[in-house]
Length: 417
Image 1 (spheres, rainbow, N blue to C red):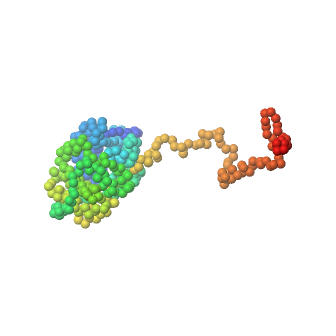
Image 2 (cartoon, rainbow, N blue to C red):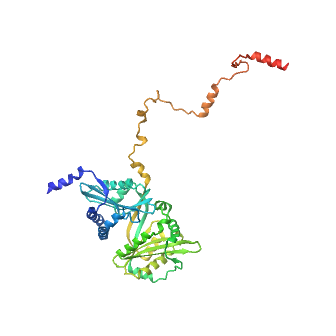
Image 3 (cartoon, rainbow, N blue to C red):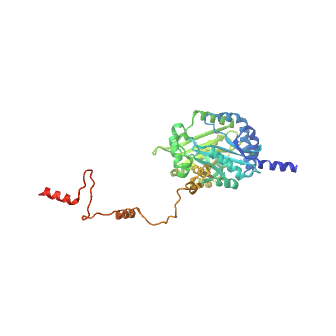
């Protein structure tokens, strides 16, 4: 038995690591290493992984078929695995963050406990950086307590972008908030015609650096027919319902608040809400949360989850004041495409030894540096040119004759006479 374990430990070291797309036979191994990774961080993560893997086992064939041609679900499950001698070492899943696919997101990286996490994780990340050429910026979110993942991402060029805090409002608190009457006279439903208003609200609610990394436009706030059908199928399968709306300011003709809540009709998981509020209208937080609490009253009593970032201090202050509970603290990190310059395998000009290439152009002696300017050189050249005085004779060449200057003076005197 000990010899067999020793053989298994020596065999992967003699084989190279292969990075390839995920296949159906990899799903069981991915579920195993995912449960090991999430069990160390949160006990609830194991149940979430089981639900996700059950859906993936059921719909893998359809997702694989949709990845062959352009459609909104083409990158629904874009993943790669690291394999060494038929042994699964890790998996990475990525997806486009915006509609133009200029920013991509690292959804998750799971690694086997016995593997070199820094080495295998770096190979998976760099494979995505090199194979997905349309990505100009990479984005990810990691728990602040996951020190190994933080070290891996920082080693591969990711920098801090923002800090996120996730909150949960208990059902009793939701019932209390629902008793207040929200003052939202201009609350309107969301449609594709409101994409420009929502885009302006999104750009105004975040710092310039975050806005540059997200790189959203009007298309990110529109829903295509295929996407609407796929969302309807997803809501029917998962027994959820999505409600959204925005607050319109008629004087400025702009949207000043937006919300979207995903409600669980089975009553098994908490409701999830997304809020976007203009920085100049932070008084909307109590009104929007009262509206969300009223909507949640028509469904089974569950808590409400929502997030706040470090550049939204008013939201965090309000959530702390009403008694919301902090459940997770994460770090959003980004990586620019300019880091690819260091990863390029091409030979750089700095590594070329020009002294070996240009042997015939070597100087005979070492030049002595001096403080010489072009103006001084020109003055020196001008001073070296000989100046002819009037007493010197000047000979003019001619094809037929040579004219002496004394004869020239005599001829001019004759003309004057």
